[in-house]
Structure formats: structure tokens, C-alpha cells
Image 1 (cartoon, rainbow, N blue to C red):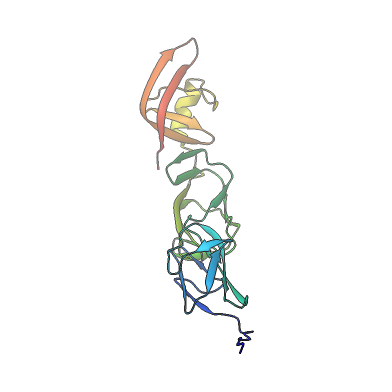
Image 2 (image 1 turned 180 degrees about the vertical axis):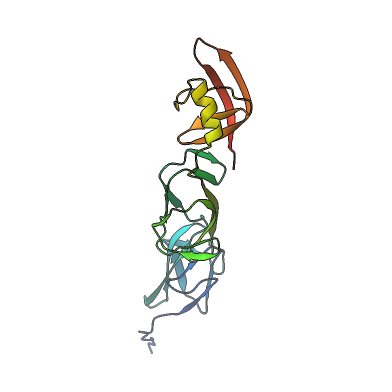
Length: 212
């Protein structure tokens, strides 16, 4: 006698660490029952092994009859990418200094942001002077934090010092009693300096920090 089995039922497996079609920042495993085989993005997948590579994964589970079922998910461990404009006049680490309005955006469509704890609209403008703590979070929970400081008020006392020395142009450096230098319409305090005298200016090489 001859025996055979007709099987038209697609096999099923279990994703661990993410839902089918979901996004996660953690490792994922996949398991199943029976003598089925699986591939991850076309390569052989060992049952229960950890998947950690960032990106989109498609697992295809196939049984002995050739029936198959696909599962997909995305692993994302990179923090959201902020898009801040214009270019700050000064930046140290993740702190950005401006004397103008600032637009806050980000690349990831599934991300959202809070500014000083309040929900912020993608591509929105910050115009008031002040310090703003910005947190951008994506769907799997990766976060980017940064600080924006807006100060549009010129330092008039320092400006007078610059004018008195005929150095009130942003390309000129001048040693004032407090070692401030002109940057746009605001002033930056030097934390270290070295200079060489010329006829009408000082060349000022320094590490700069904003005086708030």
C-alpha cells in the first residue's frame, strides 16, 4: 500500500519580543513546533536564536508540504535624528545656542517630541527667549535629548566696549576686561585664549562658552 498526506495548512510560529509587523529596540527570537524550517531575510534561521541586527526582518516558516507563512518586524536601536535649523552660532555637546527663532524637526515618522515636558509639533518653531529641554522618542522607545538656548538680547555694555575700540564687526576680536567676543548680535565669553598684537586687532583663538 501507499500512503500520503495532503497538507494545505500553512504553519504557524511565535515571535518573541515583538509583534508581527511591529518595531522594537530589543533582540527577537522565533519558535515553532514540528519539523518546519525557517529563513530570516533569505538566510537559514536556527529555531530560538536571537536576532539583533538593526533593520527590517522577514521570517518565512515553511513546512514539509511547502506551505509557508511570513512574519515581519523591524529592529531599531538608533536614537531619533533631530533636524534643527538654522545652524546654531555655537554648540557644545548637545546644547545649541541661538539668537534667532529655531525650528525643531526629526527624520523618523513614528517619533514624537516634548519641549520642557509639553507635546511639540514636528517642524514647529520656538521663538521666545529661554532654555528649552527637548526630548524626541520613537516607537520602540529610543530617545534623543538636547538643549536649545535662545538669547536675542544684545549685551549693550560689552557692545559699547567694542565700539570704543572700533572692533564692533563679527570678524574682529578684541580683548575686553571680561574677555567677551562678538558673535552675531550677542556676546560669547572666552574660557581660554591666546593672542598676537596686530595694528588694529587681536587674533583671538579660544574655546567659547555662551554667557547667559
